[in-house]
Amino acid sequence: MTRSYRIGQIVPSSNTTMETEIPAMFRAREALHPERFTFHSSRMRMHRVTPEELANMNKEGLRCAAELSDARMDVMSTACLVAIMAQGLGYHREVERDFARIARENNSDAKVMTSAGALIHGLKALGARKVSLLAPYMKPLTDKVVAYIESEGIEVVDRICFEIADNLEVGKRDPMRLLEDVKRLNVANVDAVVLSACVQMQSIPAVASAQSMLGLPVTSTSICTVRNMLDLLELPSATPGFGALLAPMV
View 1 (cartoon, one colour):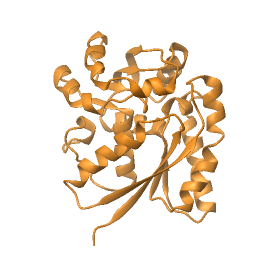
View 2 (spheres, rainbow, N blue to C red):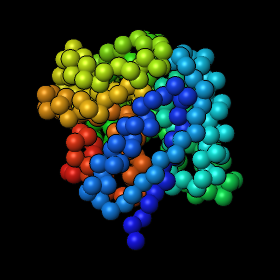
View 3 (cartoon, rainbow, N blue to C red):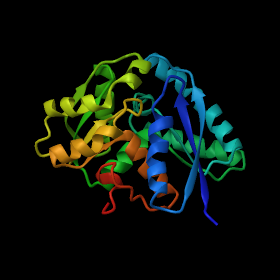
View 4 (spheres, rainbow, N blue to C red):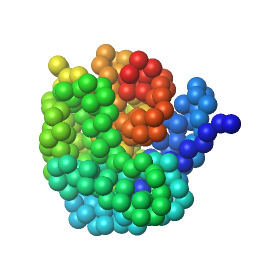
């Protein structure tokens, strides 16, 4: 009998990307592996990517975790990187502990994670000690993301931020523009490039082309999220077409 897994995401109300990019990668995996997946979300209100709205949104996370655990997810994750990283260094571990507590109190044994923690997990799986990245955030929030990544032992050599405050506009940005954007990024001596350090900024259509163009491992936070989910579920991650992190050799 084919095993089916339930994937839960705690999604900002204005996010239009994580419920498309994450399933797309899992559907591609289904063509190669026997496991099947269903996708379920609970939403937190957020319109503009500002410190105030991110902090308010985070307060809804525990409610969302309880709702998803009602449906007996196999794994559940937040779907907003900057909301976690803006709250202080190492904060993803506190969120994961809180989610695990809520799940257990609800008699759920779901694996729990965050997209913020997934980016760190993915970069370390690549063995990356130095990276450069693209992000849609305003500069002060981008600085917090960079500081967070560096606090986890990964140097950020260069970053470009597009300073888009409206989260809906972030989701509308053409991912193929990243192939031009990345040409302005200093990638000398880096181990990997993060094509999108934001789960709302679409990236997966451009990842393989960017990796070929740069001759370096290229990933994104959504790809790292899928890798982290598969690792927690103890499933093979090999899914060609989505960069080095999901390539068979990783």
